[in-house]
Length: 458
Ligand code: SF4
Image: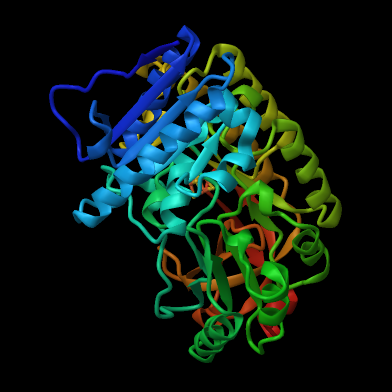
């Protein structure tokens, strides 16, 4: 039996990690991997367990009495932890990893309450997530180096009504731990505002003339107020004057049947869904910790479209995630081809300090990312153009929001969130009127007020 510990770097980062490795060379390798995945969370390796903020015992089951050795080590760690707490040195986290953890899981937690986490060899990539969850449960903050203005951290706050449409924050935080994203670390766990507060705010907004509300949340469809997001939408739909409801951003895992049914049954809920998938490759989706596959995503889209056949779909895509091969990227293009989007947002993967993916091997060359992004955006643009063109000849209800750029022009939105340009009176702003679509472009459509609109707008 060897007893190996990865060596401490010359400069010690803010949090100290001590890993004790038992057993074979494979365990030595795994310990190094654990140190790697924890580095983005601010953990640097130390040789001194008594100083450690986090102690990991990477165990081996091969020898007899292996687990007894682990329990006696845990006894020593318990004493160290108590001494450290008494000396005001902060809390010491304790993780048992490796084969003993795999074999004895719950027994370890029962026999040794000093242990915070038990992690089997298949779950090392989840260590940052598990440690963040433990820290959350204990009400602690992680001291990782997160970029403050990260895209995934930016959530528009509810604002005063400044016209016809408004955003209303209903949920914050995230429990999903996608490996490229800082939100679960910076914003903490999912939190939902009480329905009564939201409804009161929505009434205030409609009293000020708002006709359309977009419900916001980092995981808006994880909304956990009574009855979930579907109930909230139904309650909002009953508010006088509120004509349109949208919500963003959703996670595929949280699209439940009630919400899908709301798309079929609540006319105020607009037929537009932003449902990020990020990649079409199951291998990459797993590395991203997305907790869905391409197939489950596509089946979900089928179910939502069965409920609301004219639903316009939008998504988010990341190209060049660490380890993404040409084949993985082609799988993403295939998925986009199958879904057929009305719009989508796409980004080159960029390392977010503090996220697990930032430490992953196989970072993709910038030139390759550029090329993939261009190909993906060309495909999305084709789909968006085709979607806009498919509206020509239809008559759509348009909510007019403001004057257009040209004299006599007014600008509104279709149910599918398309910008619609129309020549018409400003008196229509704040109203919904039927518009016959006559032309389309990449980012907007154009039409004429339908004859009935000129006389009596809604
Ligand atoms: S679902 Fe993923 S991308 Fe979205 S906020 Fe949570 S961790 Fe970030």
